[in-house]
Length: 171
Ligand SMILES: [Zn+2]
Image 1 (cartoon, helix red, strand yellow):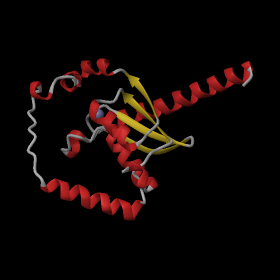
Image 2 (cartoon, rainbow, N blue to C red):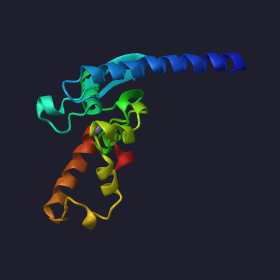
Image 3 (tube, helix red, strand yellow):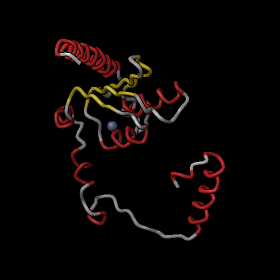
């Protein structure tokens, strides 16, 4: 790419990103109560929008990103959002970050760093700290209750996958 074209491309990208991040912020302003919003873009089209619905739906995981992911998956009829970009008003929390990985979204742009969200009393610092602790030191206790019958469940699923997806390479 020539120098001029590269500059033009960067400017275009900047303008597009600005347009999409504004749309995510617009969503956050539409939020029922929580002030977070997100949109998902595929092939330069907005395929879904989402805003925080935790308090309005009494659903603790209804963060804007989760809502946008669910809407996008419903729209395209697939659980994979590969090739999609997520624009969000705030840096995703741990749960949303995991959801982004699970959904295979490729790129994320955010308007505010998560540290800056603490001033509206949204602070996920504690959970981030918990992640780096040993399991036994975490606030919420988790215990390994080993049960042999789970092996049967795994074997059954493995066999179903073999037939259904022919996924010999991923088992
Ligand atoms: Zn979140």
